[in-house]
Length: 229
Image (cartoon, rainbow, N blue to C red; front, side, top):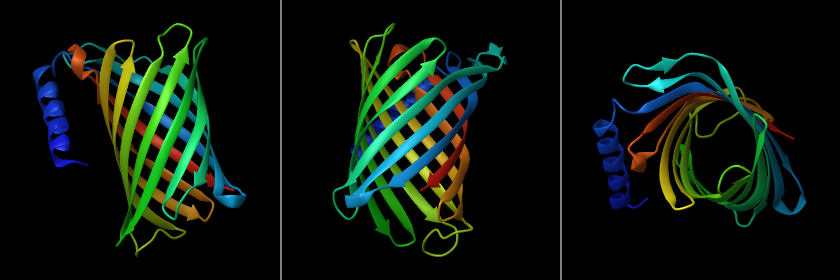
């Protein structure tokens, strides 16, 4: 990532957070998910993901809080991917979100490139998605995520070994004429059970709404189960 761009985002995050910390909103909850991955001939693969969002607490840092448990939503997504080179894939898919009685439909396009470096791997993902629902205007997002995976034993992640995964993502959103930026930082501890099962647990921190003077901080406990067929 360009250094000037990174410094600008850091400055935006730091000044925006400090300027309106007392007025900032927060929410805390859990994001469990199950990922099913299946490989096909000719370098095709399919990822099916089921994720739920459960809220335990929300409020403002000025002191107002609500600790009532709330089951927020369920996401179900299907993503087909094609390997186009040794280290890269293109993918496209569909996500449906069930939030109470309402449904949201999202179409996804992405490109992923993985670099194998000495002692760890580095993955770059560029994604675009378009979301549609009955009661809201269409939302168009462009996202960039960088992920590092670091084995805690040896040069690669083998069965019955732990690893660390660090995600940093920038999500640009446009809905009607309103632009928003969300920054995500996700540190995870993973355990490779065997060649077909992995578990990851950690935090998922998100901050957005920089431009409407009402910054929101989201703290999620993330638990992910990956199954390879």
